[in-house]
Length: 512
Image (cartoon, rainbow, N blue to C red; front, top):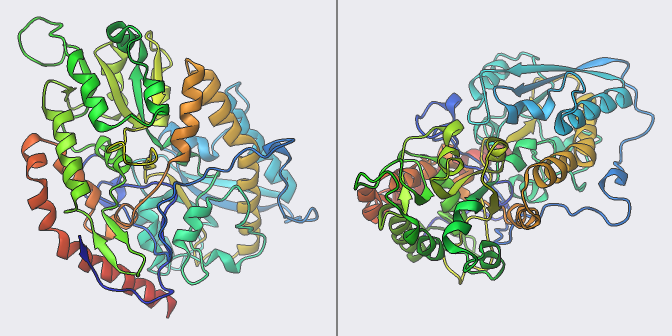
């Protein structure tokens, strides 16, 4: 580890909260999200996992009150909400045209109507259906605000794609607006603390960000196939609960599972494997890297920053991933895209597949039983299971060109509060836990997964740092790159730290 420049005290605040990496599996265009990850600066680093608000005792979430005055009446004014809508994940955050019997759709519809009636406003939803959870609207937003146009009141956009706009003075400091109560449980407190710049928050994430929950990386497994082989001699839920679910344990479980099912004498698609992982730069790399809790860039107690790309922990990670991905026929690797990433597991050809929680939608017609567990730890010395959240999850801002700021602030508060009360329970408790989960243990695992979300600086600031997570994807894309990871990472150390200095300077300019 090499220490880096000391940052001015009070300028940085720490980061930790809804995981974010560059989405998409390739490319570099800002709108496609490929190597884009950026974040904000904070002051006190924390190794603790993000805590998802627990259901209050007594009457539950539905009875938690917000601090908005009961007398608010904005006389039917429009609130223009810009959001992505190119897939189910992004659509479900705002779009519900009518009640249709789907538990999440109906909760979103009910929330939208309740807030509009409560505040006497009309939501004017401006959807960009060309953008999904893997892409961002940064260019569109920048063009509008730079032109001085009052096009949007509230903006929801991919987090990684939003953060670079903050330091370019595109958004209002939300702390200066009325009605917003950032102590409320519907806001992600760790995100607020991390992105707070000398008392100002320009971006928020919370329970209005439905993509935050659906974007949590997890390990899915074919329970039927696993039980066929191990026949009760191994129980994955017990392994997790005993703290023994590690990369070594996963590789050990995968190795004996390989079978030349198609009988052609070669390990290829059509055979049975322990693990499936795409053979291109993929978000699967993000999920394993986040679970190993390496912190590519980390802040020390004395305020200096270190580069952990060449640390012992990173060396251990590369060695263990090489064993899992490239040795002993542990892993099948094919170029499946996002919509097909679950197919190998569904088709009884692999036990383990990693994806976001939203991937459960692809398993509704799966004939085999399946389960969900956390991503494996780097080793047993790692105290907790951790996870990144896909950085395409929505973050919310109010542009500096907006005029109806008081109305928008009240609307943001009301929508966030009502999401906490109705939409999150519908999605997480009813749709994910009850409707799709096949056993009671999976429900318990989901609580464990979501409670372990964390971030590091490189994940947040990636778009401004040369996309470190894309480097990790490249390292895990083939055996040679994985073997030579240290030389690759060492060559990036100085440049990464220099780019981080520039991020800090931009924040200082914003303060000035």
